[in-house]
Amino acid sequence: MKKRKAKIHRKTKETNIKIELNIDGTGKSKIEYPIPFIAHMLTLFSKHGLFDLNLVAKGDLEIDLHHLVEDTGLTLGEAFNKALGKKLKLERYGHAIIPMDESLAEVRAALDISGRPHFTFKAKFPKELLYAEIGKDRVKLSFDAEMLREFFESFVYKAGISLHIDLVRGKNTHHKVEAIFKGFGVAMRKACKINPRKKGVPSTKGML
Image (cartoon, rainbow, N blue to C red; front, side, top):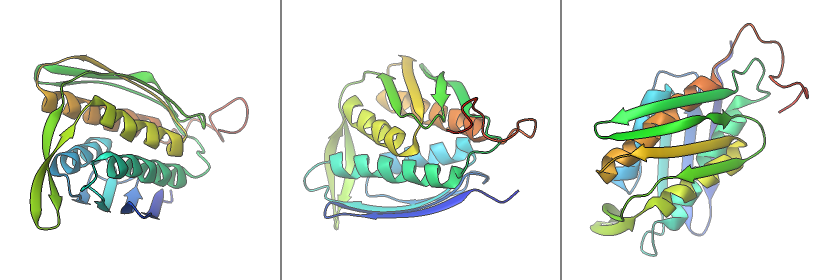
């Protein structure tokens, strides 16, 4: 089977993002991102999703995190949509319940590569101060659940999937976000899997 790959370059006045994605990979990643915490989350997504992911990103962090985080979701979502192609014999649905020490995240069965974007997000945690690199300086910027919502909403819009994320419980913010990204990776891996028993597009409509 031909490997499902995509290269996307999104450049605006606010951000510059390059992504190379191989859905049928082994979980290898190379992430060059000015926010180390988010780079770590994307590495976890790649590792547990078994997606090969090369990502280089720059953005106007002197303003805030919003533009870069949102555009990263848009670019990654576009890469998945392109790499999935005609979606023939696709499993289509994915689900994961992932513990991270005291935290438990559930990416529900409504992860559906449907062509109809929808996102439901139930997660709360206090604002976290993250290190970011602006030129040669390291600064602290605040990161909260709404910023995470922006990433996933952007991904869903461009990827054309239905995604429901519930954070069941947890205390440590790092653990909560890590459980979410690991769960997202596992659920996406299941949904992107090719099922040889299926014929054509997995929909009675004949298209996704």
